[in-house]
Figure 1 (cartoon, helix red, strand yellow):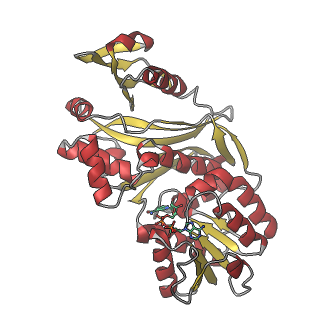
Figure 2 (cartoon, helix red, strand yellow):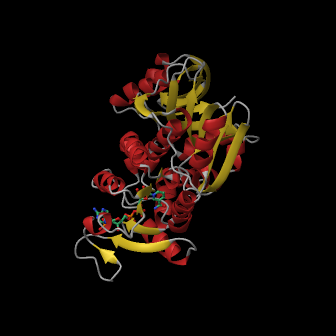
Length: 383
Ligand SMILES: NC(=O)c1ccc[n+]([C@@H]2O[C@H](COP(=O)([O-])OP(=O)(O)OC[C@H]3O[C@@H](n4cnc5c(N)ncnc54)[C@H](OP(=O)(O)O)[C@@H]3O)[C@@H](O)[C@H]2O)c1
């Protein structure tokens, strides 16, 4: 199978190198920007790929929604299998791509877009065909896990942990999508669609780690708790799907506590299988490229889809998900929460535990309290 590659950056170089070395796969042309075609295998026009009858599959590793979506549709229309590592593309346009690929009888796979090297979506999609998936999620962002591990392991403050993550190439120059939980949210959107055939576009909630301070870390560690940024998806018995990302305080015995550095842990719970968890590298040139190559090899074995036929866009509803929360906020705002215990007071701020409250209520209240420039950190408590 001859594979064209769109994009020759961090992942693209890895995909091209691995294609050159892989048995049963052949490296085709690589799309680069105009002016950057400095060797014979590079081209600058998508038509050179789409109209090439020797190209069987296209691997998109450019990022962004456009022109990636137009190129993907053109490749699928031309009868080429389409594989991508681009979570932004699949989160925004996954339903159209799934429909078009099925109509054309070609594959549409995107393992690398959720969990990096971890074969999560592949297994989740196969489980959904034969079992009832009850929930899915986990640690789906390695940058923030690295930062949390640094803050908890060495006492670094947030800014220093971020600098370290950037120096090691784990965080981008603009780390917003990672630290606000948006990157993990896009991944849990894909997992929900693989598990339940609904790609949620509305009602999604993401809280990141960008308001976490070294003092917060010291405080909850003194209580035997560790913070992890967890993505959660669940389908309730009435069919409603929840999908959100938030910091969670876990205990020494919880599996997430053992996930250190920039590792990811993706998990799902099947009605019959029980809990399945997979740990591995969620990003990086070769780990990510390895997932792209695994998808391409899967196509040769007959794998063709990760979203079910009839997958649609929909909305998440996080109002029935409920936790107690650990919250640090201004004393003047304390009465807005259902406080069960005051843990500490320091100057103008207070740290409290809440009664169990809905995820949507906590996220909405946090947004309202911050509107006035107030500082607030919250994390769900795992019981
Ligand atoms: N890096 C990871 O560890 C990782 C892990 C999982 C998933 N992903 C996903 O994989 C994708 C690629 O990530 P990356 O880290 O490899 O990004 P990257 O290093 O920025 O590489 C993207 C490459 O695509 C090129 N490109 C962008 N638009 C193009 C266009 N219209 N025509 C031709 N070339 C174009 C860029 O060129 P310019 O530099 O000139 O813009 C760049 O060389 C993203 O969707 C990302 O979310 C990455």
